[in-house]
Image (cartoon, rainbow, N blue to C red; front, side):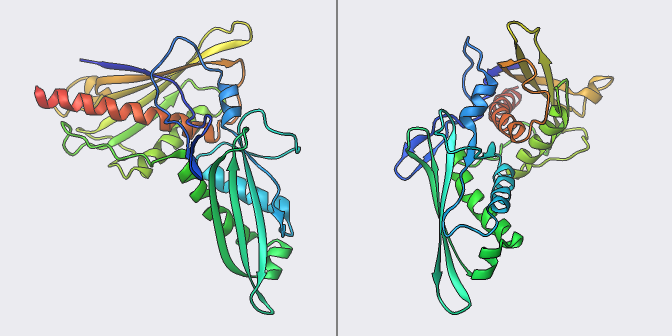
Length: 308
């Protein structure tokens, strides 16, 4: 029996839920509906805009913003630096306030308060960093210090915004199996490579048994991307994630391609050309959403194999 499921691409970064001083973003795997989602608008509502640091500002503010952008993207968030002080109509805003507190003639306690704010002004995530530094490093803009601070802040904020970490899949019914992402085909822009890398990272984040070269007994994951005919400057993009089992008992072509267990379909309406460039962190969000569905698919397929 082949299992088929449908899911929204779901960036998992819509309006944050207020949870006291922090918030979680909605989970990315949602039931499909009849109305396509505009991926561009969804990305805008997911965007985290980095505002300039207030208070005791760093000596190289643009360099500090670059370090933050790199670290936040590395955590799977969609990020850009603020271009104007205009209020956001959608998305999230990262505010920070720095204070240098004198401890000695040479050393200071650097305290940075971070706050992620939604368009309504509510706090979606917050964090505080404290580190003893030489005042000169902060004032002149030390790249190594900036990267260290950015990585620490990005990890804390991403943990709050993305919610609970992905849980490793248990694979009953497939003893000794490893997961293999065999490829992505058909995506515009750099989507094939970006989605492939992003899904491999998902597997690493969950500590799943995985490999790059499949052997009998492994589970194969393949993604096919198709674009619908343009209409009114929009088109449907569909990502189909196929999961197959490389049964050691199979022969012929099936011994190479495996037996199809099921597939996850993600379909959304997007503006024509919206995905023609670099996918960046968007690929991670899409892969994260797909993983949730694949996890459910594998659990169901495993139960069927055990039941015979």
